[in-house]
Image (cartoon, rainbow, N blue to C red; front, side):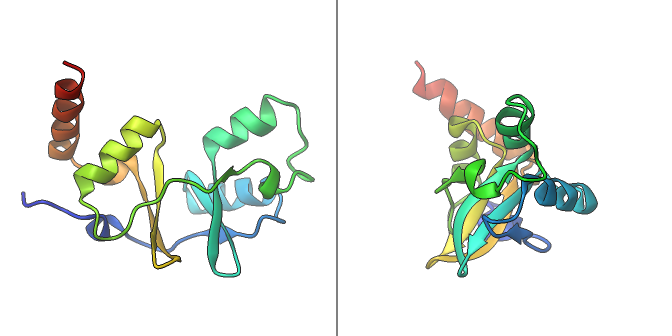
Length: 137
């Protein structure tokens, strides 16, 4: 297997909502499309990301009403991003070190896509594991 890049991992449509949409809107879209994250985009610019983890930690565990809670108040703002030219291994390392499972892909301020931990293959996991293990010695 040759080295892959983030551009090679981007597939399908990007699902986004504005920050004024509710957490319930996001949850319904995520369930309908069988996805784990929604990008928050306003005026064609990435403002944040809302994930299943955000729903649990910032809404359910706090007893908030998802039907009236705007995404702008529960999203992860200014998320870490990758460009399409970043190697898949570097993107995976960024995700592993940051403890997140979704990574928006942005180029020149424009959203190109989103990648998920599920998009990587075993060889990329092994390489990152080796890098992280070596770094901790």
